[in-house]
Image 1 (cartoon, rainbow, N blue to C red):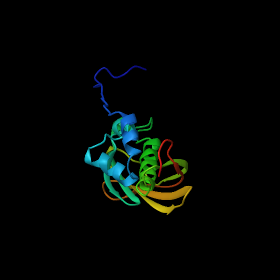
Image 2: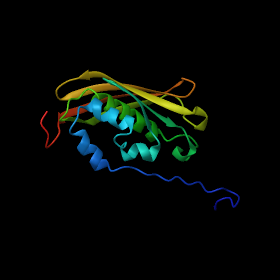
Image 3: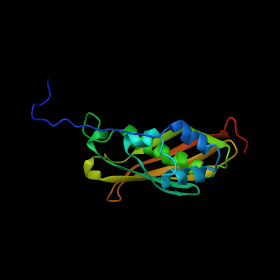
Image 4: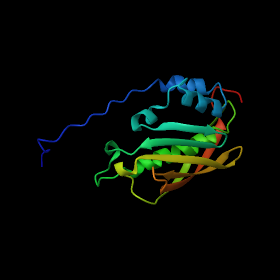
Length: 173
């Protein structure tokens, strides 16, 4: 089956800054300062944010919010935003909420994530916003949770994560 000859081809161009430079800069500052530098435009966002169109909305100690416009470029084969996109923004806000509480020289990585999808996300959902919050920050692990809501404030998904917290190589805390 071929494409409809009257169909307009869609194009998306993605540009991003040097992720290695961002990571190197991040090693010299506390997590909250690193995130705020990205939000202010002093450091480029990570390429995944540019690729998907995720915007860093707010950064407070232990609480981070990001938003994404639900568009057809994020659709799966059945005509809704792919669940992996929702999982990605939820993982991002939870990880960054943990990052916002870490001192210089400390890093994190996701050990596990659980997502509960509540409703489909489509273009009609508009701008969806995810907010992640730290529930526990220990010396080796952190726990966080998140909510994703659509432009009308309706819950689309929830998530929880456990992160490993560690000293970054080549830095001293």
